[in-house]
Length: 159
Image (cartoon, rainbow, N blue to C red):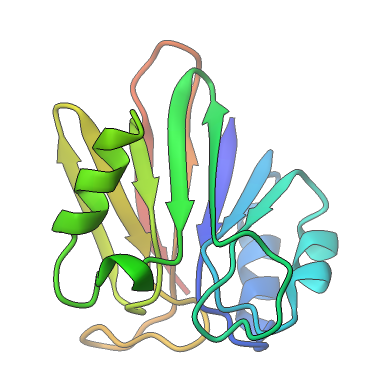
């Protein structure tokens, strides 16, 4: 299974459209919040199963604040991250993910990519495809590939 992971598009879809042209085919899209009302367009654009959560700028949204699901036998927990103070540290988020029995936790909010692999938990943030904040400010996203019992392959990509 090939999963595109993005976050923080903030109603700016041009780069997401470019990413989708570049990485297709995908089997799933995960968007980690701050669509600012663009979730229907994003889901239609992806044209595959999509998991999209509400971010701190998704005012009046009916999107779920968090979601848990299984991909190829791995328990995944997704959230925007602001309720776990991810701008300061990933520790509260990791603690919550472990309490939920997650194998993989994904978050956004910081607009900076991050990836940590620990024996019991993978923690990732794809950064922002629209408004990056890391050094160099390159729009970023992640591709996750899973194949049953094999390892989880993750790649951080830039436009």
